[in-house]
Length: 111
Length: 116
Image 1 (cartoon, rainbow over the protein chains, first blue to last red):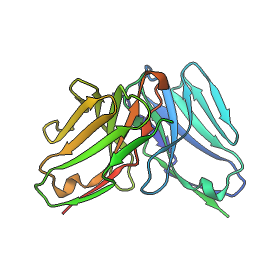
Image 2: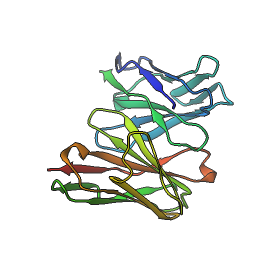
Image 3: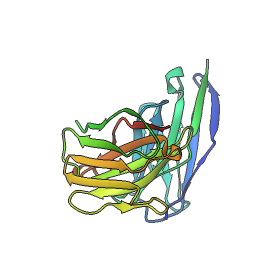
């Protein structure tokens, strides 16, 4: 089955700086790659997603890049703000199958 | 749109009892629902995939006789944890999708299960 690796497990950045979280996946058939933000005790919140026919997608301060050849995708957050502090998960799936999640990254924005 | 609810949000039960968790898509018909489990400070793990009107597909290592899943309609799936034990204590989250969402899954708010 699919295996998703996520790094780093913890990331601390100064407010205003950029944050980058990286994931790799194992199954070349995966074609859907969402990123979620989860606050303690809450449901995962989709922040951006990308499909395998696209290499990059941007939504204001958030961007995702996908390298299908290398089987990795990354989340980029620019101009970080205190409210960006949370746990972020990458995930991968094949078509409409269930999601395989990475282990998560605890992002800490230092004031 | 695309709202998914779960009930109950929190449940505490005694060891050996069964607990039923409901997952509802409120404003769309969910052809597929998924059940995930999340232990404290861990990631979400897919337990099973549920399609309306058919038997659920369980992930490797998930006991189908312990975690009973029923998807009787396009808006409701239930997960029953049978003979619950303390090690079943976890955060259970469902998600729903349909043909129009292009793979995007809409998550319920989760159910915190504590087995004493």
